[in-house]
Image (cartoon, rainbow, N blue to C red; front, side, top):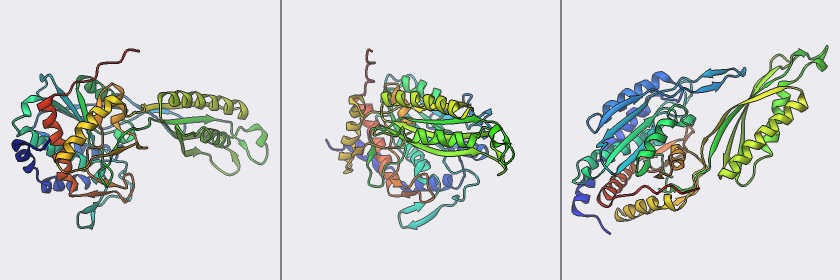
Length: 407
């Protein structure tokens, strides 16, 4: 299949220069997941940029909590989700998602945008995923000017907490996913354009260990060392790693003066199961390890958190949409391939509702979550054309949501 005349004319109107200009401007604003002022500034800019394409709605986050370093469970302050809706009455609806938070807090040293060479720009969020939002905006702006626009309705969700597993926006994402025929998420592709296929799940856990303080020299036997217990727990959890389960012990917080037995500690750990079976095994193993350590060290321990990202297998339902994207790419002269990824995103949660979703339709780039993050600028227009063509093909040919599988 080749491009029709109006497809070619629609795609030719996509210009990468304004997409780059928006990306660079947005990347200058620090919008770390917990920088509420920066997130609010981004929200205002994004709401204005999208105004005119659809109805803009702003959603407050659902309540969420976090464990402090002393074990207290505190409310988690989060940014808001921007929703843009066009033709809500359309029988075929497409859900497009992105996030405007980054992993770089307001005190992180990585704050500036700079050119590495012609066509390669380095900056916080340029790839993950302020560039992706620019791609989405460019694609939908062109699509709305095409003769096929009336064929589908669409919803865009831009959340502010994706990098911390979407605790305040996850329920809204799931609700909108249930209303859609398919989903497009604009996380960055690899530098060569390869998309993420299957993804593992992910769970973040904080375990508070409460021991007993005592003088380390005079009567250490009366103490119960919380840091030592947390370290023992960390080693036990690390030993749970398997081919279908990754375990990352990330941090131990606690302790105090050298002459005191520490009475409190918090262990932070991430687990990434490749399947629902591995997830269940991980949770059971975590609880068993906590119980064993509590008994062995005579401490009290409790966990906070859970598996916020379900595993996302590349099944037949997902492949239907991947093949549509691949065919569109071929007509643009873009080879589209995919491979399993170790990372997770909102695409995991959308797929868990039964939605077919391709979740790496954003820019080509790399080194995300590091100060070396980069964007290949030619990919802004390239990926916007790909996403626009996918939307036009769905509008022309339709796309049915897969029927729920009986259990």
